[in-house]
Length: 162
Image 1 (cartoon, rainbow, N blue to C red):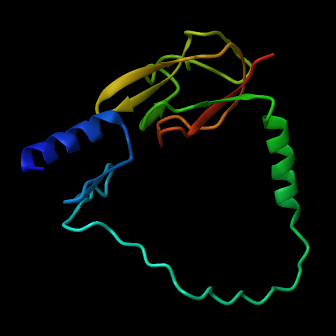
Image 2: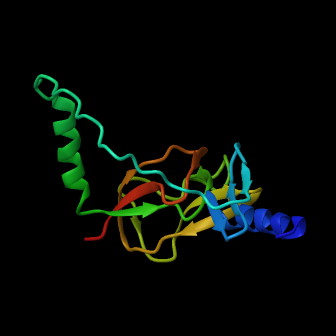
């Protein structure tokens, strides 16, 4: 793989929105990671994994302590959220709830949406991408604050399809 092909691979990964791409052949291995810590690794030989011959000794058991009440409350809310559809971010970028600072928000809790409605904007590489709804229902919960970074597949909001 020559330098031009590596540069094209880096450009492709940056445009695709992927966090990390690895390519491995018999001659080399290359990993491209996007974000603030962009790393390119190239090795001449394949990576070998070494498995220890003896298993590690188990850690001594800790004394049992009562579980705090907070996890129980979280599990109850998770069970309630299971009947909702979680809408996730289709890309990495900055999440905006409104088209511009002086305009109203696209969605609010309690608002009905249908397929094709614009629900938010995600800015990626100076491009503002309108994100349209793929479900019909009522907005139950917005999980991301306005003007905050989001990752690919990060939950944005919950929709009650009923």
